[in-house]
Length: 277
Image 1 (cartoon, rainbow, N blue to C red):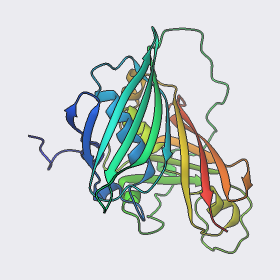
Image 2: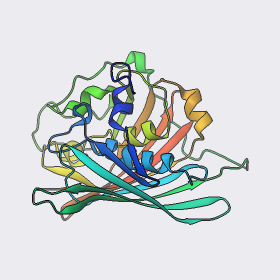
Image 3: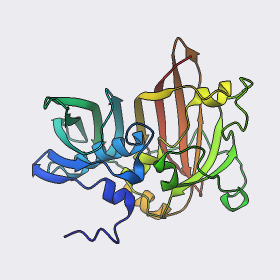
Image 4: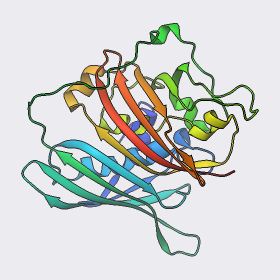
């Protein structure tokens, strides 16, 4: 049996029981609850976990796209991960998260695709170096900005672009920079990185300095580091940077990068986000 007293809250949230190969049962947890459902990053990590548990898995995660089709409600859910095609170096996955509705009907709350790959040593270069910023110890830890439990599951130390202190419609930038790591500390792995890729507040909140309803419609995370490089990062801080490029007709994008403290780029992400006026 799993010792619930010693398991990290992230690993507890990602526990999946195998019903048969590729079909798993999980449940939501309070530690990563957002306003009306689970923190989007924990949902993404859960879907990736289903891929990583599959007995036919080839390689390590290369990309993960998660589409939030509907709200995930509190309680149990079923995740199905299917390897749609396996090539010599890449494997392509289709993933769904299903729940029983109040009327007993099974509905799909989230869909996803993923690509895993066998990485080989080749020519490599960094074209977007990590910005020169103060060390995490020089940046003050931010208290949770509002009442959502998942905020307490991360230690966030803003460098720039923290949430406005006054919501006055006078925002002038969507750029956020912060140091972040799991709370309590946890050695980084692919599921942890998938979750951390969604720690940013909605870009309209910063650009407008107005706290409007907003939510991620779709997020894609590209994993650039190997499992060994993530393990070498350990439980250290990640430097995370995000900004939007366009706000139009109720939707905006977000592009983000995450590096470890040594300046190694671990992941990049893109989102499309819905917001209300």
